[in-house]
Length: 355
Ligand code: GLV
Ligand code: GLV
Image (tube, rainbow, N blue to C red; front, side):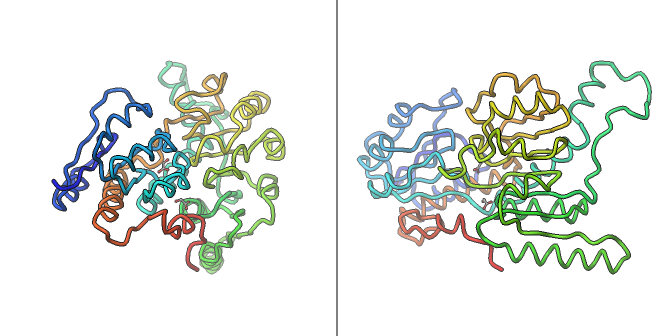
């Protein structure tokens, strides 16, 4: 191949590899056994000639890596993730490297995991499963693992972008929950959806669902029974949910996080879970992955899964394909879907969905 493209991890499916090979690239996939590569490992992988890299959210793409990539003649980097808080886009731009991400293909898959965690927390599924396996079930009881009915409760969504909106629609339509959301941008499409569904329910003699765009985050925290976090991680959303904000939530609220760990002050959350046994949380992401803050793993009112929100076969193959197309596009001089040097795709990340 004329171009050398490196993937720091094996990725699902073969389409992404075929696409690159068909377009004249030699594809090199790192086979290193350890889960998280160091900066040195990746510099070695980049070597003397490398046109583009497909990297992972566990890698720190800053000064050292973009310098190495640019020295090797590289013009393109794609994160195989929608989130790009591990990438210093300004530094990449300085070295003339275009940066891509993989939005769109993971929206529904991620929202479905957030919905799964919500149901699992509401109905205490993990605790109940542990109880069965421990041989503790000795007969039906009226008060065994009593949880929450979501129908008629209020779901609060912080960050109503693609994923947050998809989750909101699932919870409203699937479980007849009322919606309250907080986002800097108005999501007219989401509002129209809830209004239309509310009218449908009313026409059928059922209680209509309602929506409200909160004017502050605290309004959501105070009013919602379920709160799901879907912001991007940046300076403004670091520890967005802290001790003070936790104290504003209902004592029996359910908090879901499928965005990025540092959006929650995890140590404060552990204290809150300990002091409020009826408060429940479903976490896909952690402040200091792969670790959990001390005490979290002992909390019965926490459900924890290892950053798998985008892990459906269709989505992961789609993410790999999109990442390959990002890199290929830049190398071949096509217009790039997510070219950070042109800025729009990254601004689009925060843009409201079309009305
Ligand atoms: C996964 O966390 C992603 O950002 O795609
Ligand atoms: C992420 O892709 C979002 O916009 O929610």
